[in-house]
Image (cartoon, rainbow, N blue to C red; front, side, top):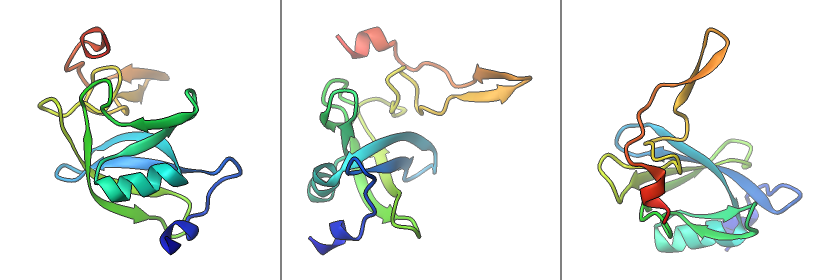
Length: 129
């Protein structure tokens, strides 16, 4: 798979990944992939990340049911960041964040403070049992 060799992996064998909702353009989350995660994502059409804290592959939605169907994979001009165009499934509207929000980018800087502006769509306690 020559296309995997064109990715500029960091010294830990990882590449940063941004998941963007295909239909709205919303940036949902940031994560990491290793070579196997990227290959599995391309093969399955489903987002598979590498969890640095757990040291293993993480199939998005394996615990929450909030799966990301991947429509397109893009790489940036330096070949060191991947962009996934996805549809977030498992809840309407889609929940990508472990806090039960649509996007992990739910806080905005206002008056010198990070202020949450997006609502919790589902209590995380009910998502991760």
